[in-house]
Each structure stands twice: as C-alpha cells, then as structure tokens.
Image 1 (cartoon, rainbow, N blue to C red):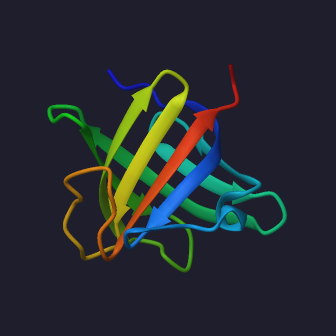
Image 2 (cartoon, rainbow, N blue to C red):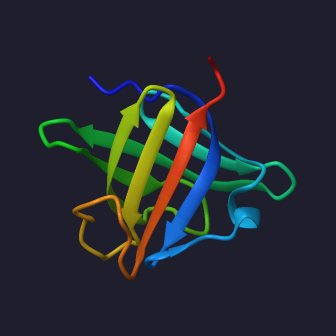
Amino acid sequence: MLNLTGGYTLVSGERDGKPLPPSHVADTTVRFTGDTVKVVHVTRGDAYAASYTLDESSDPCQVTMTATAAPDSGDVALGLIDKQGDTVRLIYALPGKPCPTEFKTKAGELLFVMTNFNK
C-alpha cells in the first residue's frame, strides 16, 4: 500500500516536456493526508488543494485528483504517482487530458519531484 501521508518539499518540476525554472518550485511544500493533498508556497500562500484516490492495481500507481478550492474546484486531473524512500514523483494531465503513461511530460502535463521533510 502506497503511504503518501506527510509533508514534502518540491525539488523540481517539468511542464509540457520542459523543466520548470527553480523559482517556480522553490519555497513550495506539499502535504498529503490519507485522501487530500494541499500545495502551499511560503510567500504566495495556498496554490492547490484536492481530494485524491489511488488505483494501486497498476504499476506505477494511478492517482485521480479532484480540486477542492477555487478557482479550480471540481476539476479532475489524472496522473501517476510513485514513492521511492523519501522521494515522490507525481505526473498528471491538466483537466480533460488523458492520464500520462510515463514520468516524462508531454503537452498539457506537469511533473513534480518532492522529498519528505517529516523524517
């Protein structure tokens, strides 16, 4: 069973096949509970909040996230997620796009790598 519960710091990101600038992920934390995820930037505040479900019958695990905060409330993003030690990789497609098939972005997809700070 994939246990994501805890706090993470974003260390890198990618969108549409291109790396995100370090300033885009710097000072950003992600907190997972058993069924929610919240992304917060230190100075900008809340960036994203969603409920999520995992389908662990596939490898890598599939994740479905449903935004719970405006302006994205109700939007559904499909993706893949895995955890190796203290590192989590999450790739997902923007709402309306099909689920990614690998941890490499294509148009309309985002990838984030994060590391656990609750050791």
